[in-house]
Image (cartoon, rainbow, N blue to C red; front, side, top):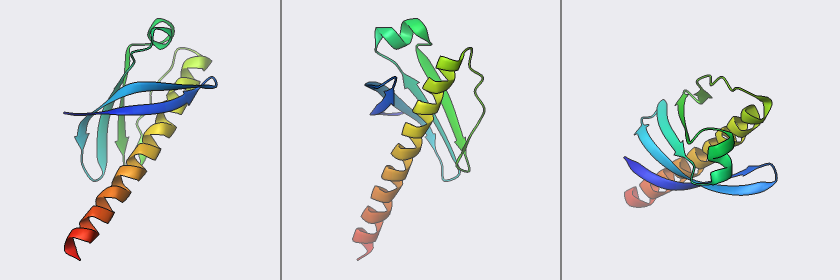
Length: 98
C-alpha cells in the first residue's frame, strides 16, 4: 500500500492528510484518506474511503451539508492528484521508449 501526502482546500484552509492508495487499476482506483488534524477528526470522521470507477466516484452519503462540502473538496483534490500522477506516468513511459 503506497502512502502520499494530499493537500486540499476546505473552509478557506489548506489541510494536509495522508492518502493511502489501496488499489490503482486502469479503470478503478481505491484510496483511503486519513486525517491528522483534530478539527477534521472531531467534526467529521478520522478517515474516508473513496472508490473511483471509470472517472466516477461511488456515492458517499454525508450526515450534514458541511460533510458534503468536505467530501466534495476531497474528491476534487483526488481527481487532480490522479490527473497529475497519470501525466507523470505517461511522460516517464514516453521518455523511456525514446
